[in-house]
Length: 322
Image (cartoon, rainbow, N blue to C red; front, side, top):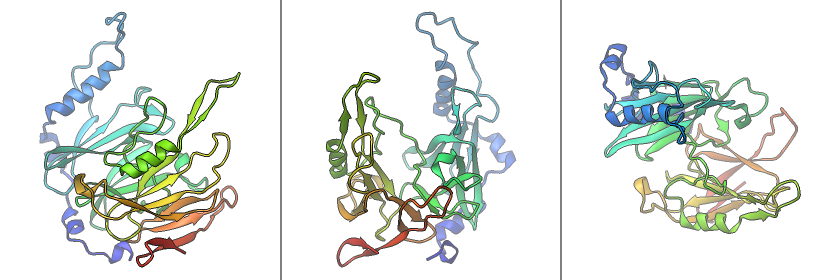
């Protein structure tokens, strides 16, 4: 079912939720956000050997860095941090943007990563956030790599949406970049199913030291995806690590969530293996449909539209099938 055919009361309620300029000027940021921003701006220059070896302390938040927005639709102010354009917060993927959405028990960090451009906009009556990301996240033929999300209270997170350039089939990019562990492996989201944490841990491959470089760890990829089996809960993709210097012998695996877990919004529920792809394939998702349609894509040449094989959920077998 396409988005323009879906009538959600929550989507309708989201219309017109942007804060007016006059209201925005009247908003006073919570002290915690003020402290967080000032601490980040000043802490970057700390020299423990000589604490005076630094620029003057920043005592007021620069204009345009911390601004009120309305994304969650609960009539409570959300806050967007547009970090300053400096090497401290910026790179080839743009400058960092951090979005905090109001919740019942405080705020939720809903978006936090580098973006070349970040906007809050209304599309078909639904408030969405859209970011222009590094071109590595998209096909080489696109002029701009856009990703869009909308807040869904039942999921307690931003969920993928088609971008403003009409692209609705995409690879998954998490709205929050959680960073890396000390060993270089990506930090997993809270309430990742323990089964998948164990599988990833035991799939690690250590490459011994060579004369040119030291030992390294090759880690499998594991990330949550849009719901593909129609239960409203996010599912998972696991990609083996291979042998560090080559492709893995088996392809990616799709694990579907089979029921709610103990975490917020039912996170951390039991999972079951629903599909194993052939080697050298990747997953793309058609997010204009509910549930999302998973596409199994094979390489087809640089800049080409590689098509893909769509998978559908078969409830009787508990598998994704062609």
